[in-house]
Image (cartoon, rainbow, N blue to C red; front, side):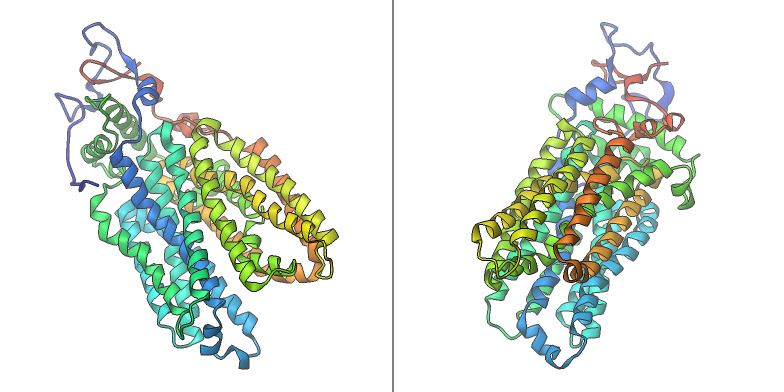
Length: 529
């Protein structure tokens, strides 16, 4: 990746300060103008620079997935139980619940505080903010000498790791071309799953490693992703939309040219047209409310869509499988080693499926994947529940039925990953720039709260009502699928600056891409009036 250096470049070839000086008389040699909307479709691409920048940001989301899942590996180590003398404690389950749960409690506050940093000091600054807390948590966790210290470490790790997800979603959305936003924004979900996958296999490796402090090493590894991010952050540019919002429009244009360069577009027609639209939009955005209260008044439709999408994702029940998969497999008669390997294989398959989901979202659209994911999960839960109800008892010797039940949990991933990758993309693109971080934070707070609720209630519910617990997920998947089909609009292909219109706020759109023309000979940008 070539090093990014802040640059200032004027808008247009001759008069950089006169953004609005281009009128219809600025025609090419043949008098033809190319619509910016057409240019976005034909010329917008993912060049190597943009791809590498996107991969760089994915590392932070990967760090979240790893940090979220790795504690299960450490808690599963007998040496941790010995070190903290769990055998002589009466409240072991409560301690383990606190260690696991404080990650998400910290995450709630981390997500809530990220907008302050990101909106005031920039999108890149928020990566510094998140990385600091993950490093703090990793250090405290690996060096824990008592349970209280480990619990506190998980709070700080969650605070930073969840904040990393907000940073990644917003940063990717604000650099991606409209026609490629799906695959770039969907990569957040891919990175999170890769993090879970790495944590699972690290857990397998250290499970078979006979060392006194083998539970500490996985916690040390949490520091790898933030160290990489913070050491390489100077290589990537700031968000052009944040720069434009702060009045640094020349720097914003320079960033757009840097990330959208293409041999087919040597005059930067796409970058100039997008810059024109962004500058006009941020000027309008400054007149609009941006408080948290406005999220539930003026922007209530978008806020509802964000919490519906993330809430529906959690109500699919994947956290039950991800966090308690080994218990589900053990209940079907598999050994501890077999259960651990099955769980690792399950999350490994999800990586491939998440990549497929991110690859097709720009062609299929967001809503079909979200709805299809919920409906698919409902169908698979129905089959799994029927098998467990009939053959799930340990005394049952029908091995084929039990294997079929395990197979259903793998098939479940097909439906789940369709929605999981899309949720991060959707909540990042439906809000305007001046409240985008708050909107993403709101969606992730819902995800966070649902994670806490489901993971804390799942063991008790499963012990109390058994297989009937899964009926709850079937019902929720059906209801959420219907709600998403009816209530949330499609965003595929829309520039971020125009999405307000599909939520009924047409007056909040400063200019449409179809009304911007690009002179194919001089690359001058013209507003059709």
